[in-house]
Length: 197
Image (tube, rainbow, N blue to C red; front, top):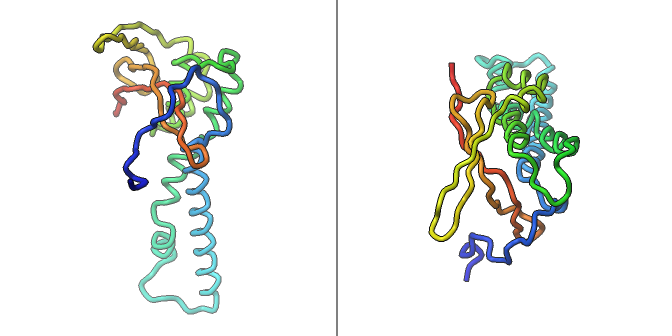
């Protein structure tokens, strides 16, 4: 059997949610790799311009065009996706409601996610400046979905910044690498419509 045949977690179901600091944080790991690539490309750009200091310049190529060729869109990807990569972890550590062995409040998790997800800098700055205000304004209602012999609770969260409809939130598991094995992490799965003006 090839290594690619088993794509899903096939270990025992977790007994309880315990914060596992040994598990990798995929977003943080991605941003770390992206940061190294951005820095390497900046070094390449600096080396190129330093080599051109003798007065010879390739005809038809402006410094901006050369920068675009060497750096491309990777710096934009880094800024857009990684500017606040540590903010959710920082907010979770400061949260008195997120004790060991709990998944925490869905509204807090959602607001932390919106910090990373919103493409609007204005909305981002507003969330950061008025975090507690937004948290207290969000309103929850619950609905139960029956799936076979099981029921699944879905939370509808209204008044979430940068959305036009209530956000649906439910508990789910996500596979996360941990060394050369995979572990399950309990997370909040959210679904919403983003407002575009």
